[in-house]
Image (cartoon, rainbow, N blue to C red; front, side):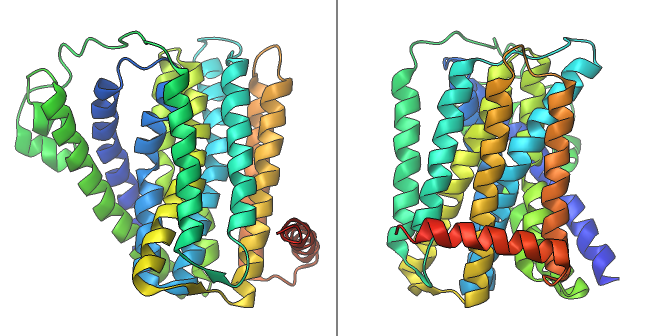
Length: 379
């Protein structure tokens, strides 16, 4: 019964996060309407759609405390990063091709190189920063500073952009009570009036509030599910919490792809990962250790986290190479390859959560641990 109720709660949080992020998207689209294509996807869209990872990591740390909370947080952010890098581009490709919009999608090589290399560097920084048995506020601060540098570079590198929407009728009128019940925050705030800066900010705040509430419930549901099946919260967060928090990224990228904004669709996925790795993990770590002091990690947690960081880096490099070498456009075969990589990632995570002594799982785990130790030997 506990398993069914926790899965039901996780599903409900997915829906709330999705609808709340719809409102956030509308508000952020208006506030970032003068940004160039590819820039908005990697900054405003990426931050908005990655708020669930930030809140979930915060709640994992402050509810579960110390090593369990940290492992749940890094499991969510890393798992979400893998989901974003593989599932989102695959969905975009399959939908565009499936609907007959195009036989392939063309993505700016500049966007792929810019965001792909930035993400790989961020993940290398994560490997070298999150190391050793003790984590303090300085580690979180370093990750946050790296993200600030990335955002400043993105904003400095853009010129004046074109307005993408006129926002004549941004929300439908009607009964606002019904709209709130349905989770349609834009209708609650706007009614049948036009959006403006003040209403966009109000919609932004309300969306963030509901995202936060849903993420708190998500953490509670994951903890109960892990207890019910006897699986550590770390592995539950890598698979379930990460997928739940990645719903907004998927929907935003899907909408961008339907409008032909393929650069934004992919830039949102990669930019979200940079936010996840640097800020969604860095800020909660910084805040928690500033209040409660350093996090002391067990040997098992250090090994699990080390392996996940290396697996995340390998996955990102593989996805990056797929995009870079797809010079004639990204096609259905690339989408299938991305889906296969994600299935392998999930299978390994579940297998390790069930038993780390399974022959194939143990061999992969030992190889990842050896790579993690090799990286940290330079520290």
